[in-house]
Image 1: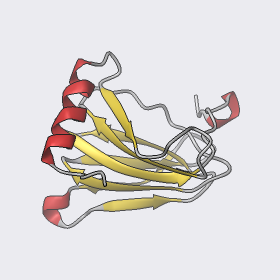
Image 2: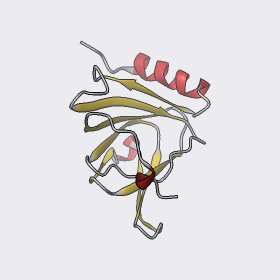
Image 3: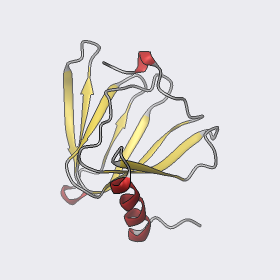
Image 4: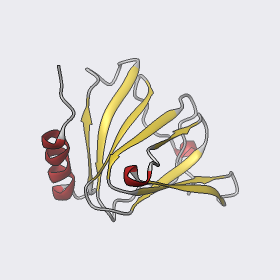
Amino acid sequence: MQRIDTNLLNGVTAQAKESPRLRMNYNFHGSLEAKAQRLLNALEPGTVLPVHRHPHTSETYLLLRGKIRVMFYNDAKEETESTVLDPLTGDYGVHIPAGQWHTLEVLESGSVLFEVKDGPYTPLGEDDLLI
């Protein structure tokens, strides 16, 4: 059994604060080849997540604590929609369809997402970044 509690969130958050990328994953899946990629993603304000898409899998975010803004884009690099996730206001998560351009902005220190997407892990290719 793996507990998802304050101690785990605090530990991953501490690693994120020390990371040059200002984020840190904690994987529950056993390998990058696993059919389900399940992880905590601790994120700090200032982390840079490029606008990207996952062409072969949808992605689900559930915000366990903190506050983030998730933004969606079209192929013309225009923001088409955004939503603020904040568990204190009852806005817990978002499901992102496969192929949807998206990014996020961290609005509160100590933010931690639980993420799920289909595996195996596939690094983003040049065609999956909206630069």
